Amino acid sequence: MIKNIYTLSILTFREALSRKIFIFFFGVSSFVLLLFSILFLTISPDSFSALNAGSVDGDTMLITIARGLKLFITIPLFGGGLFISIFSVSNFIPQMTEKGSIDLLISKPVSRAQIILGKFSGGTAMVLVNISYLIIGIWILVGLKFNDWDTSFLLTIFSITFAFALLYSLIILIGIITKSSVFSMVISYVIFFIASPILSKRESIITFINNNVVKYVMEILYYIIPQTSELSTITSDIASGNSPESFEPLIISSLLLVLILSTSIFIFSKKDY
Image 1 (spheres, rainbow, N blue to C red):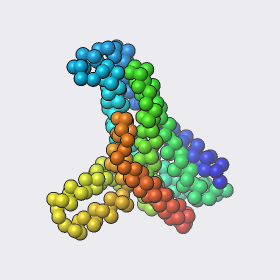
Image 2: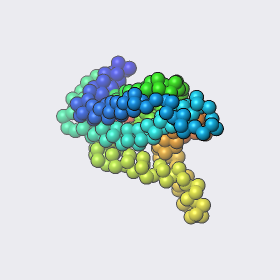
Image 3: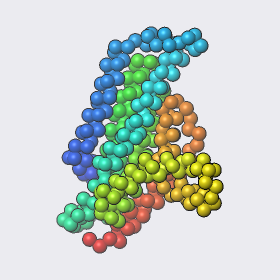
Image 4: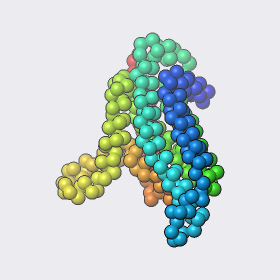
């Protein structure tokens, strides 16, 4: 079973490579690392001492600047990286279920559960590699320049990848049901950019609306829709060197991820191709 999932993961990874999305993502990450390398070569840490009015010591100032730079990279990476990643995997399932492709795939000695898990693992691995490349690169550059080797920053690799995996599981489910890459992509973007940010502010919204029906609906939606906004907050906390206020979104999202993937496997297993 593990061998089949691994093989399908590798094939999915190669599929991503063939679409040049992986190369584009890698190129953008390399460009960002190059810019920071040039910036750090031309600016001395001593030049930041001018910003210090004597209220904090030099080392504290440099660490503050270093963590600010990490946060400066992580916030757009979470948004932009996931935007590109969602686009890159939205067609994996619809293309797989096309006549000819699905016939060849299900004729192989692999179960349908293994097919879904292989697709999921391959797409997630693609994002993990790209995110790791940029985050580790920034960590090394900032560490060399400011002597800030806080390894907790590396945890943002997993928080960003996990946020993608959560949305990707939903893309897989929608792709199986509708066979539409556009619909999968649109729903994911709506959740990521609109629904989750709004639901994360539900308590403030309810205060103004003061309607019990709206309150209950928003509470239900909050727990059944991927909490990408909360995962973004956790990522920002980690990047800035702080401990997340709550790990509840991670627990809820993990359960939701398992539920969505299980539903995808169940529906895919019942499909007649």
